[in-house]
Length: 88
Image 1: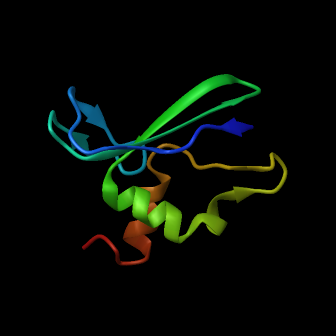
Image 2: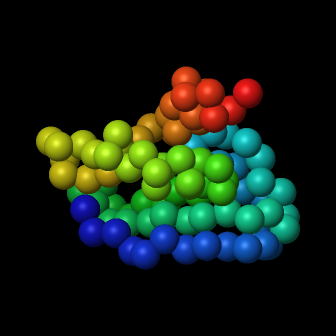
């Protein structure tokens, strides 16, 4: 997979939903976009600041050795944050 640099959006212009935990990110929210190109084509994920921080601090947990990419399914970051007590 080839990935683009992460993009930090300080104030979004439309509503989004965090792909890490599923929370709604209304207009004006801070978010991070991560995008890349793989076998399935172009992909773009949107993360809230808390999920982005968790992903970056625990990036080794998301390495998929078989695919040689960093990978997670929708909602997985939020689940892992809950397990680590990062979310009350």
